[in-house]
Image (cartoon, rainbow, N blue to C red; front, side, top):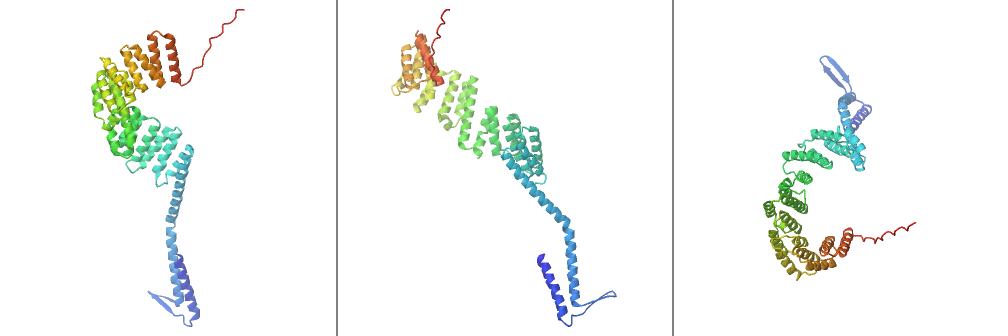
Length: 404
């Protein structure tokens, strides 16, 4: 525009210059239907320039409303972006009320209103205004052009934060119906199932979780172990040894080799009551890998023939005589066989290697059985000190009051 104006200004100056410098400035006659117009060549040039300027002015005036609208739109967009930025910063600073206010005001003219509404929903929840939170989520759902997936994920996250577990489950099931296998949705669904202790449903989605990148291998493994422990405990509480065995057999080899999982399986079999079967399972497992937790369970066995587990425990003692857990297990098995002297010897050796509250309690009970009440009381006292990890102060008997 500026270059055009300069061009025509130069042209006009040139025309006027030519008019004054040339003796004959030329002559122009225009005859249209009996109407004649006479002018010099510079006059024609000047008239054309004025005509062009008038046309340009008319065009600019015609475009003014649209340009004003565009300018207003740019201003509103700028204000909306500023409110979004200020709202996010206010939320990060902990000023949820200010954040919600700014985000709500800027949403109408924003090119990303969903971001405004979702963040406003978070701000409302931080203020405890769940009704307003749901209103913002509704507005976001109306604006989201991606089938509401982002809104559903945000809604489920907020419901989980509020411990609205059943509502979060319904939201995530709705998400699953729209986009099956959504990685973030599956991770949230796993959290809901875990908190609701719906272990069967959680176990069913573990293969899908393993195929996504939402959880790492370590997290998947930890979750599988938790599910397996819970299901084993459930089957054991129902006294169903077949269910315990079936559940254990379908576990991956890595799970079956994990010491904590082997212990959970042994505990479940123990609760089902088949201690003769458990004795064989424990003996086989301990032969492969020495596990103190399994040794502890071994000492609690109540088999039909109590001499069998004791014989194996004493055989292990020839190689691991300095293992306090094994000595405590052997003492338990001796008590089961009513071998009080051996039990006392094993308990004293175990407690000499490692102070243990359970060991002291068992030792005190054994001494009471043997009629040594004072020694039993001392054992119980030491057990209490061990349990509380605090030495008990010596208490003196109160001095009797002198008669007046």
